[in-house]
Image: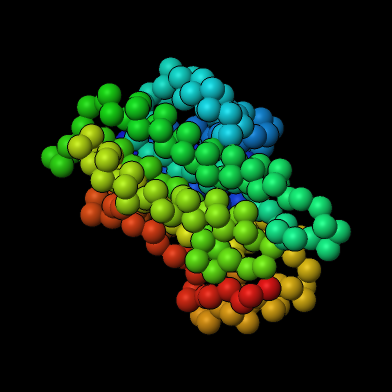
Length: 254
């Protein structure tokens, strides 16, 4: 038995990086639970891969817990959990109108950071109770999604960078803690990818950002993220590390 023989959970599976990941894991033989804030989006992707869709707000830990209970009952114990759910925000600390942006900051952290933690916390509890799948006593792998903004945050990304920095920072301590259960924890920090978050970028902004992407000098494809997920799942020595997937990009100030 391998991790890919069991159930995989992907949050944010209704589009972008999550949808690509759900499709690739299904192709590799996993039974995929597609979790998204939108039930329609989750079910649409699930219908394409013979998976099962679930609607949940990752910032609501009770909803996440209830969703995992349903997944276990429907598909069995998750062995692979990939957190792609998140929001992209752009809000200055001191906007020109002088308004406070504390609410926006809190919402970004609740969805991106608390949501990722809640999924990891609940997934780890489920995985820890399962039998190992190999001679290493491996029980599962949790893959979280940060962003290059955790190191290269641009103007207006204080909240987004803080949320993604938190995800990156908890990778090693989480991996060390969960090691005794045979659970690995990894984080991918994508650069600029073709997703719903980047779809609205004006052409001039997109062109300016791509100047900071050495090679290949283009937007990343969501399946390239999914291929890295596959590599992490298949290589048990990948643990406790943040991998930048960014074509050597370093984001400009703005």
